[in-house]
Image (tube, rainbow, N blue to C red; front, side, top):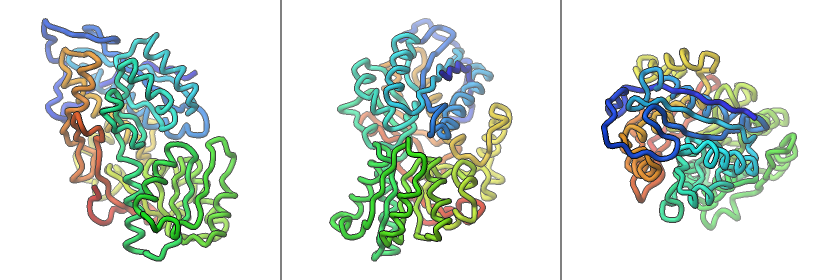
Length: 401
């Protein structure tokens, strides 16, 4: 089992976040909190076929390395207990019980995955433990009435699937659409967004839907079937490893549809480099984060600060991997919540503050901000489309919200 307890560091530029403030006399603490420490928990796929996504968790831990090095949160160091669940829901349940019942963490912080978090969804709400900033865009994480202790962070998968589809309807109204999707809540959320955007046309315009399991050795058969269907548009709703496989197989068989790739799997180093940049040229995705390797940000202070952090706290990380930006930005969001809590570091107040955010994060694209309310548990609700030019992603069009 992967187990990592990290002490993290601070960011003085977000919403007046100044570390080291004196602790007031009246303190209200929940589990995992003392005068000197705040304990958070998380799980991630450090092993297994989806282990590539764990990059964002490692970055989210390293962000708090910086926070602690700069004095912590109101004088308290943040301890993160991060456990490996291998992206296996039964294991997710096991390690979550360990974090909540044995480690007695204050909250879960950026637990990874849709099916894995689905497995603990009811448990976390029954136990009234914050399940915060899940690295999944499943729409179910934005239901404060039924699940008031759960909140996602990424833009909705359904919304992104709809954005891709509306672009197709606008630019290629006679399209024949094929869909490759992971056969779990992750893939099915995108599929629902695609169907909803097509409306009654979905039965006519979608010519093939091909599912795969995360345990499958390849997706060659699915790609061959999609080409044979006559599809001239592909919605690639696959996780990192399988997305790269799909791109390579498409090149091998000479299939060149208009290709859309889900944003969680759009990393240049994680997906496109293994698939081949020539094979990836022309793919369209969506994003809400700055690409630190994009020349347009060469004079951007936020990007310079991010790269300096990465070099110091993640020296072996690839600057081109967007998942590092995801983990860094979720870390900033969690830091803001803890700062807003002050000395009332209880689970109810953590959720209250998570539902009271209105901040700009340095690595968000212009026009996008973190905003929540007791009725709105979707922190990010905007994206831009972008196209891979053989070297980098190039943003085009207006902000989609």
